[in-house]
Length: 322
Image: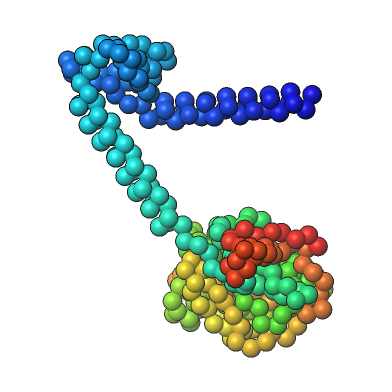
């Protein structure tokens, strides 16, 4: 029974290989050019005496033609030119693909940022460096791991008043076990299409400096406050958030945001400063608590290849359940 099974598997593999080769041949047919200027579209041919047997890619059958009628010089010239053109096209396509695929930075041994972008916090738990994804939070929740984000702005009120940007819950889902976490951001360009003027920023900075860290306050049970915003009749808003001194470093498509000093235990958020002085009210929240339990899901490094342990294992990351 075992021998029969192996034989059937071998036959299936042979048939699959033949089928694949046939498909490839049909995708790149050749021409058998005759001396009268006509040609036959074929996948292959063979010379048998004074006859040429060829397999027609149009009629899917073997046919014959007298060898004396074939213009072999024109046939070879055409097919060689087509092979060279296909090779050049394949090389160009590979070059374009390679140029467009910039590898994400390696942030720790064997640990590379995901290629799809997002916002990630580099943490260390039980002596293992891991990446924890920060999910955008605010009035709505964006659960997509991608560069697409939600953006919103405060609408100026008719009268001067004070507003707060609040997040539900007293603690973020992601807690950093280190007090100076590096945060890596790769999202689509900052635009506030259709939004009203909002918080005015004095940064006047380069695009990679548009990400800041703010400390959150717990004003009442179950609510964290991102910032207090005084809205004047003119629409100008002064920010009273507890901003953390941080430096933003560009890394290709990514930006690394690092606090300059250790963060005291508490709740924080990465805030995006939009164009025209606006502030995105949908933020990426996290906490700092060295004694917190493990985060529910993190991206961990794969072990280095045994034959070359000094090289990281590539962009493949693994999610580790709690």
